Length: 499
Image (tube, rainbow, N blue to C red):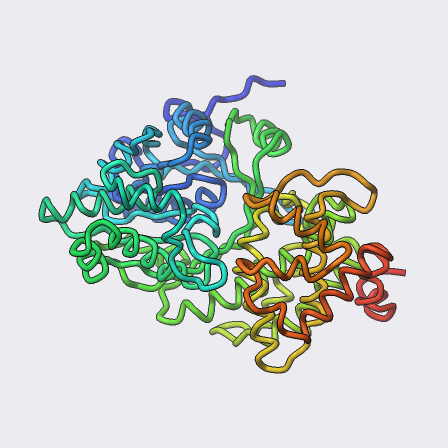
């Protein structure tokens, strides 16, 4: 094999695929991004790269940041290649790639978050953006209020100058800015949460209120926390993805594969300015909520419809789930009968058309998105994505038969073994609790719904609770295939390509 070209500023002119034409040495930072994963680099960083290619936004470069010890490995990999990233777009019929370079540094990961706080307190920083997962915002899953009883929050409230969380670091940086006569930065959540900006505001302001009421009022009055809807499937990187990069002749320790579809809808509410992301395909809208609802319900909840069934049946990827007639049939029927009826159209598309688009995206065999990754942190994803739909269906007197099956599949998966007897390794921050409830629910299904932090009063809703109990008993006594066959039915199964 020809020697691979190591990715770095010095080798950019040798890279055989499109790469930055702007002078990276002249970029200056304007954004601190906490949580530098694959999605951020395939999505927000890509939009900024496109602007920089147009000669714009050269004072908006990204400083990467992490707040957990495991972020150190990504920092080391990216710094070794000057924070450059190879993006590989995988369409069913083609592969294309480019190198992007809007990130210019990755801040040291320190126990006291000193470098991160200093960067956020710098007046050059005008946006602090985050991708820290749906469960990372300290939100009570039932009340949706701020979880101030969390031990990490209690620590940051008692020790505001020595915070442990990203939000505690943000509060300290904002306090330093206020003391220096500098206005606040914009807090921009890029996580899959309904009203993610409002949730970020709630977390930051509520945490500040626990130690400094005047600071909290200043942040709330002067700061900006725009809601946004983000969308691009970017699977985890492993040997297969690195091999794809090597096939291009490039040695990249942290390449990203992604689908060709991207969407970013943002409220235009930035207290300290912003890049012109709309010049490169992003949409600024006053009605982000409608876009969020469509995407979170059809795509994100749709992922949960697939992933637990896929895990139980040993289907390794989302594309494998879509190739399975029963699982695809489950997805199609739940979408048509119980999810899309709760979604309103947005400019340019209908819920039904969007569901067809998602079906095609999920079925893309080149996107190696594992069922395990999609099923991760179900306690946040079911409460955030699936249960709001279920509650809406109950309120409108609609069917919840399919959603009850989806919840039963999750409960059965959390028992920790597949249909073939193989182990399902712990896959949730609350796995021990979920596993205990799942095992208890084998004989008494209500043991699962009695997890009040997840289900609230849903155990008292007969239309759901009775359907759930019936499906969970069927999954244990008859098996996943039989339960899915009963739900999908022979007609629908044949329509999805089954026998």
